[in-house]
Length: 124
Image (cartoon, rainbow, N blue to C red; front, side):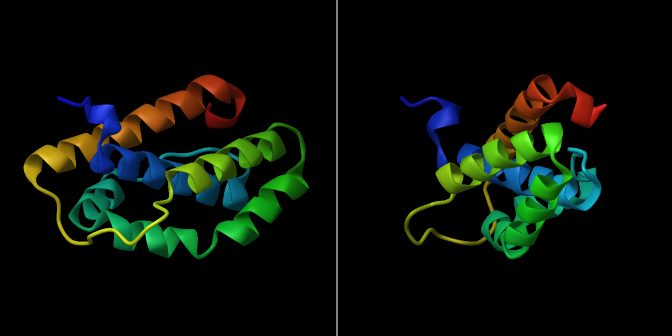
């Protein structure tokens, strides 16, 4: 039996966290979590929400790189995470089961915990 960390919902949660982190990094120069209501909405339809965030990633990467310093360093790592976590194939869309929703949130929280640990000065 596989671990939760091996599943799609967990990976989708990590991708959502990376996209949210890039959004805030590009917009504010800080890595900020999504509001709880945004995470709850993403659980309802994770791939559609991630696609919406993915559309602005290029501009936000550029903005974070222009800031320089830790923000630029974080942007490179987060962009790599986005690329690594983006499915290379078409995946099913729609709502998640309760178990899958829990795994999505676990993936989201785990990825953000890594970002907080690595870039404490950007997460305050």
